[in-house]
Image (cartoon, rainbow, N blue to C red; front, side, top):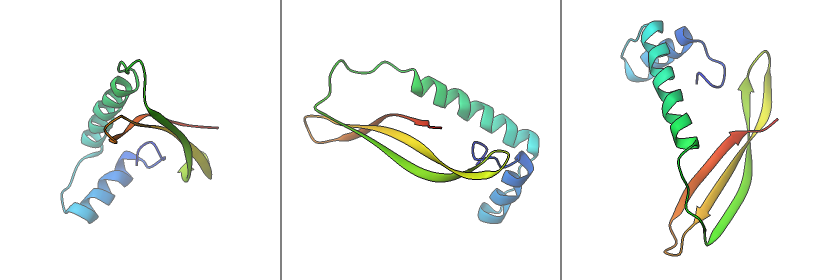
Length: 94
């Protein structure tokens, strides 16, 4: 929600409507900071040397920055030899 342009107050109100719990803008800000750190660690994790199958695809979603525009989110998905799928990475295109 934060990435798509919602303010910390808007996120707090949304969570209160959905879950019934109240969070201050400061708490929402702290949560988004922690999540951003976790995502950065995930993006920079070491990957295997080879994969059986790679899929590259994009998904268009509306993102709010100064205006609301559709932007593509690129996704890299792998399928290993046992048939299990894993998202290797994603990023917002431009």
